[in-house]
Length: 557
Image (cartoon, rainbow, N blue to C red; front, side, top):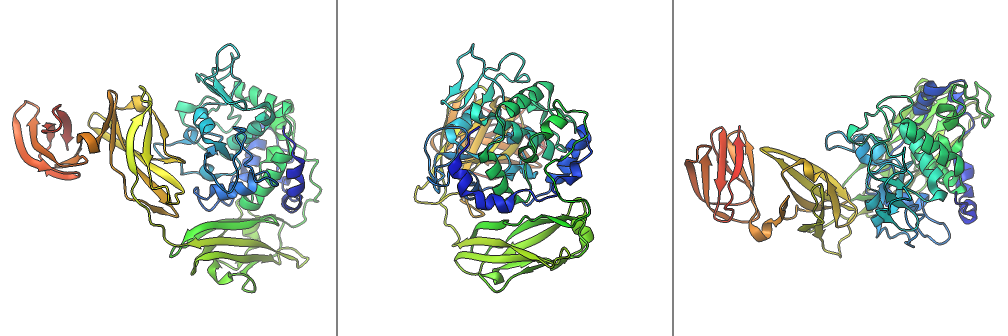
């Protein structure tokens, strides 16, 4: 537990406005075990998402920076790095995104951009953490990675859930990670966890966590109590997302759900609002809706959750035209029925930012008439408009650190261009089957795992900025014998579709011979280039060129 008085003082005004309103946890009272966990899920799983994944560093400047020095508050390293630069840092899913991966998709759930488990992390520590479970690193074996703050290594007996390696944070942050994981397995209890990485969880609503994981997280939760850092961060996240981590506000919830109070009905000593009083739970006072950076000519839409209890009047909503740039912000309705706002799922108000000029823009969204007092409050709307970016194609370079199961994809890019992140287009070849996925990289040099699941791979790279992608780079091929850079060796990949063979290569290939499975040449082509499509009847073929002497098999449907 790290108590930072400077942070506490600097954020006190935010905390005072953004702490959980009275009545926020009323719906949990009287419930126990699985029913209590589900009640927490119903309370927090609907929330306003951040404007984009690329904008996370801007949000981190509000949630994870020492206020006096502007140094990043990094729980993974003690290397001094300072905002606003995000160089050397990653957007870290402390609860690994591969754990909820379905096929090649990790973005189907709001967990991908949920600030309650996203933190800035020094890049090398983040890469070392990979997607390993939390655990205690065995003192009997030299850690695979340690930097004085975190460790990655073999787990202590009884931990790890079968994983060969675990990630152990510093003692002062173990409770932070435990409460983050309590939140994640509750807020997303409806997800079907990827069984390949189910070291800590079961596919069930309760208890979700495996026995060894419950024991570990409760131990860390008890030994490292909630700190000012967590409380202040929770309050700021509430102003952004309109949901909270209940295990920070009410640490005893973990005991009622998994620990020494399991079986007892929950009582909330922290609430003082009498049942029946109208309460607007979301949005919270002090909330701001930040659209961050947007390219001119684009509109960006965000969803704002409006939810209350015991409201008797419709919630009136308007964009004020008196201050700022109200004409650049719009909403889909101006009145929300009390019955909709009182429902368990609340009402999702659509707010749109359509900038018509370059620069920073502000507005104010006003809520009124939702209780009997006639009071109103507003939330700040913000956005910044930039010119459409000009992006140059990256240059993919040879893969390094190749093992049977992984390699590092590399590339270079024009350093004078501003880039939000990079997209690595990964293609896997297994026999005649081809599959593709897109991976996000924070910096050049992305470790790609699962190489042992295919015969060979290729990758290209694109830079991303404000919703725009650069042209695709050249192709690099990687097989289990080494690397083939197509720009140097005219590497060749064949794709078989209905009635055609498609050639993927970096340059012209000559002397193309196509053989049937008996060895008879059925077609000769003087030359082909990248993405050439050659019509063929259904069948299995072998292809040889002047530049690639080893036969390559392809199946045409």
